[in-house]
Length: 185
Image 1 (cartoon, rainbow, N blue to C red):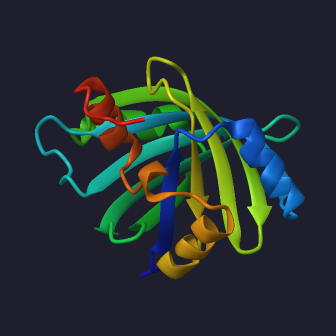
Image 2 (cartoon, rainbow, N blue to C red):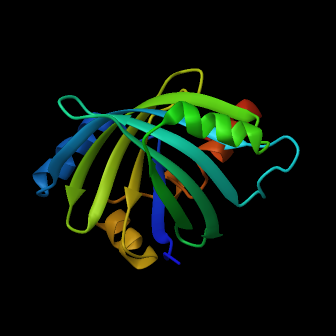
């Protein structure tokens, strides 16, 4: 069996993009890519995924390159100091066939959302500036992936990111908090 990939990340909320991008570049970050994504959240009304799991089909379009599709299941392991997930991902070549198969298996909730992601690489970090379509999530944020929770702390220290700007919530949890008027930005 293939082992899952570990994903270790935080979201940085309410930090203006332009000054942060400028600081990243001044510290030696390199622009990697701009992606336009459609993320189709998948779940079942008959047998829903547990609260610590998330499934999606991500369609990634990069100008000048072909479209990539990835079907991913994430299982949250921890939120202590950073969100740590086991991530299982499979490349997909036929979106419609996969969605039909999943519908036949009872995954009748297929909710699309679009976002633009600009990625920078700095040291051993991936720093991603995410802007969703307003109906999906109206506030941009920065996502930082690192090889360990300790390295996430190093990143926050290097850029003087205060704790009130850090979230380990998933996009679904952030959206729910926003809809319930409990998200503090």
